Image (tube, rainbow, N blue to C red; front, side, top):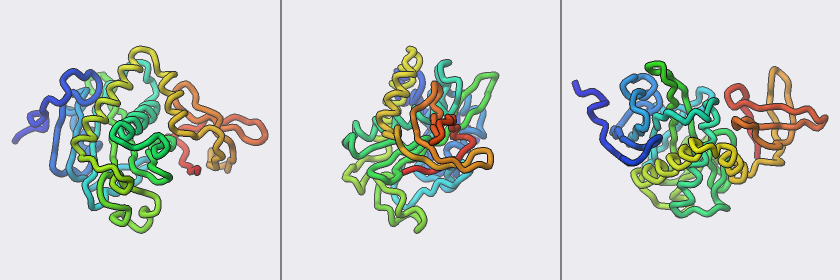
Length: 264
């Protein structure tokens, strides 16, 4: 029986962190689940797993990632991030920045693309991409599997009625790109970002994330420790958690792993 490792091919050979090698599969249940359950893949930092189709995609907070009927990008990067990233959700923000940069490089404008904390990329006001980062340990090394899905072709009607008003595709906004082309550009952008982190520029990158997210000053409503809270987003802390200020002046640090919320 052929192991997955035997199917891995060189991809972007000069990369250190992201996309140095590639495993392409026609169909999987979830690229993240495949990586997390296969130590042989976790031992390949720099690997990206790309599937043509996903049958049981994973979203944040245990949600299902609905794949739609068109051609979309389903991929997971096996990353051994620079030591400056000591808090895994920080990588979610940086991967989001990578997706945003990739879409702009391929032709979307600054005005069209924005990032919604913690893990969504929007075109207009609708979701086009989601990110799920999961931490694992293999041979006493910490790795992070960063799953990224991007809706490429067709329109929102291919998704469920519940999602159709919330999501969009690149094609709906005039960007026609193959999954293979997007994967290459995305790998380049994530590699650049992680190289910047390795050179000590993580604060600059988080500032750039804030500019692309345009979330400062937004009002949010969320629940924490059984209490309903309204507040204003005032910034990010050093690891990418939201800083939220209530009307009474009380400050909250919002962690994506413990709080689910929505803002517009």
